[in-house]
Image 1 (cartoon, rainbow, N blue to C red):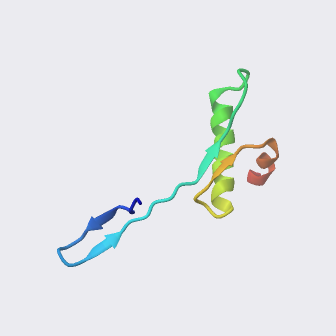
Image 2 (cartoon, helix red, strand yellow):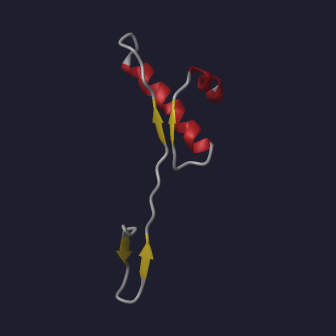
Length: 68
C-alpha cells in the first residue's frame, strides 16, 4: 500500500501534500505541424480542467468550438 508524500514543517506538525494533474492528449498524422498538435493538446487539457480536473482527455475535433 502506498502512502501520499508529506512535508515536515516542524517536529510536532505534519502536513500532507496531494498533487493532481489535468492532461490533454492529441494524436495526429504526419501532415500536422507541431503548433497544431500542441494547440489540440492544449484544448483537450482545458476540457479536462473544465470538467473537474485530475483527469486525462483525448482531443476530438469538436472540442475546438469549446475554446472559441
